[in-house]
Length: 223
Image 1 (cartoon, one colour):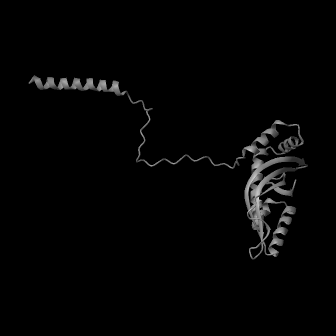
Image 2 (cartoon, helix red, strand yellow; image 1 turned 180 degrees about the vertical axis):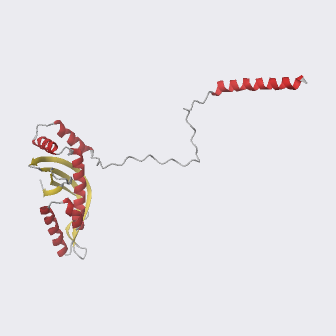
Image 3 (cartoon, rainbow, N blue to C red; image 1 turned 90 degrees about the horizontal axis):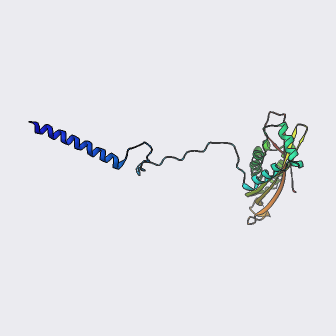
């Protein structure tokens, strides 16, 4: 009657011995081990980047701003400092990025004859000039097709504070294809196969005492 009991004790001791050997060979799970990838598990979506309103500047424009910040003894730097003293929210990089976006919107809207989009972006005098050109084009039954290939540079070249009015001038260098067509589709100006490099000087202004944070285009000219 004692043999079955001895057998149970023997196998129990053998199981404990084998368990200790396996733990020594395989190691303990610490919770830090990497799990094997499950090929049947759907891929997890990539984490979304936090949304912001920051416009990333091209390397050329960023370096131009860095160079500007290093030289404070220039009319431009003094003008920027004066604007910043009057408006603490003014940021050079943010302004240039916003101006670049405004440039693209204005060029595109003007070509389409979209006065509604242009109105809040332009000062009264500039809007009147743009609207007159759009109306003249429409009276001739012509259309303007503009392809903005790219903006190669957007550089702040002048800044000033006149009373409570801040003015900043940006030099834009862009590549465009501009073609004016008659009602029958015939090209009357420009070449659809030619990309032209255009340099513009655009001046934006804002009353720093106003609660309206938006800037408006007050002047356009060629260098």
